[in-house]
Image (cartoon, rainbow, N blue to C red; front, side, top):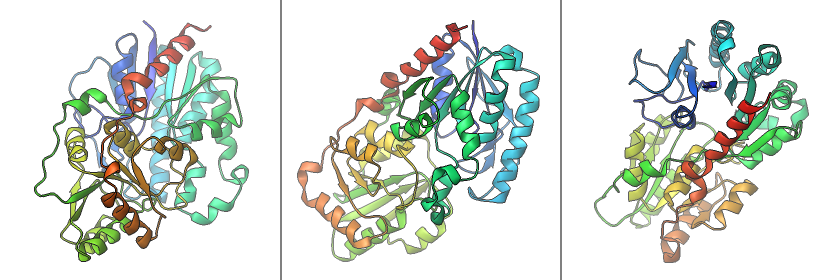
Length: 385
């Protein structure tokens, strides 16, 4: 049986609230391969160190220590990732002979650079799964950087080296894959959206809310890249105008305290919830919120994958061409990021247009349909000399 290392510093683990892409892959690939899932001791989404034990699985789990951080954009995070990289290299040096293939999440840059440089000598194949495009993604934290050509950004050469020297590339969007293929196009490559588990979606009951208010829902980070405040202010204004509307917010982050201070009684905060409860809440609402600031570099995110998989209509501020193409066949309304009046109008347009009030699941986002492309790439590379 071929041995595969899945390296995913931001992965969720069994028993935790999320059902991450790499946990799904570990379960799927463990049917035919000997799988070791390596992740961080630090849980990124709620900034906590992990418990020591997890339910027994059909694959091995290795946690690499890193000290953690409280802010996604900080020197402390840079230091934390350096510790993770150092500890991973030490662990890998003692275990690398075991693996026929390494399937690695990108970012981090450091781990992928190390794996790309050493794969020929240590005789393993490398697939990089592009979750985000660093260094380009720093533009969301420092908008003035967005005007700088990518070639001049820090670490661009390292990123290009990683892409070029992988044996296979998987990306969560065509936008990200196209970026990687600017430097290399000889590898196996596939776009596989993050997607969602249709079986778990079908199992989750619809949340039954009281009353007949139009219900918006946002799931995910309350960080600086996200335009949730504009939507919240729009809902506040519409409530004052007499509209029967409420806004349900699932997740947390740096802007949570500010948002709570601004919120009217029709805004409800849930914090982090497990996947089943999140799906139930989405099923019980009318309009899923995809709100990003104009300079945000994100492409097809986790929340979009969940919205599309469940089929909820979408309130959207993102102008990514790839997303706009997907939305052509999906009920939605658009608004201008940062513009409260534009957001109000989009919500009113949705309320008045009953033809948009239907759920339309996109089976392209069902993992059972799309993830076999990853399995096929793994199999092809494992058979290659």
